[in-house]
Length: 256
Image (cartoon, rainbow, N blue to C red; front, side):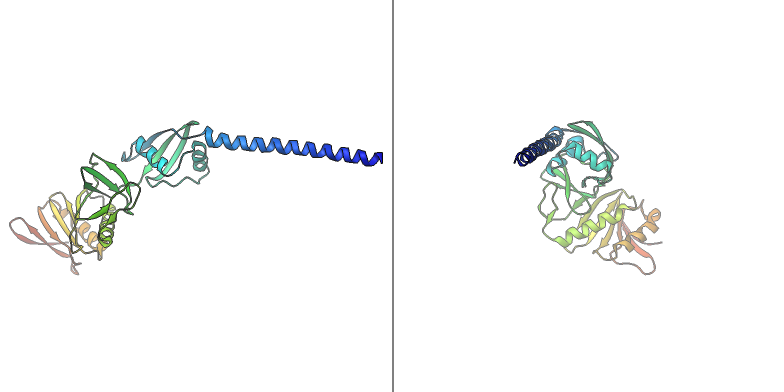
């Protein structure tokens, strides 16, 4: 009988001890979670980016909009090679400045075009997502005209009246970037024909067919035509590599 009571007492002591350990572990885990959640709330962002397209304030606004709000998690994921995806950046490095602040250094995604509307400039990426809205015009980003838009909202894809028109503009804007031309403007008309303007030359690329071949042909003849003022007709791919340049006063034939 006594032996049974002793065994019961020992069992109760073990249970109490186990419960205390469990309670301590639970409280510690909850405290750790609370510290991570509320002790590393993102408040300030400093940046060092290559193109200067986005300000510290804009990067912070983007992170707020996407729910990227914990400095420790952001830093840990970056250091372990699993960086949180950010549409503004190609790649980046995070430095923890304090529990509430980080410094982000890296390479920005090049903005592909800008649409001017109601006194503001709407800058978008290769997918047509608006990533920046401002009152100032950034250099070396083509202005898009002729594209009718139903809605332009930050961090959302452009809602165009004609989706095919948007697709054509995005294709040309993305393809032309590889040549590093200083394209001032890209236009599209009701027939879905696209033109680009470089210096004083209008290059008519026509519809969104064989754009890569047309741009390659233009690249081959670039040095011969770039200083001319007029219209270069490249609406159709030329089999012999010749295209018509219509100058202000006369027509000439320009060959590769």
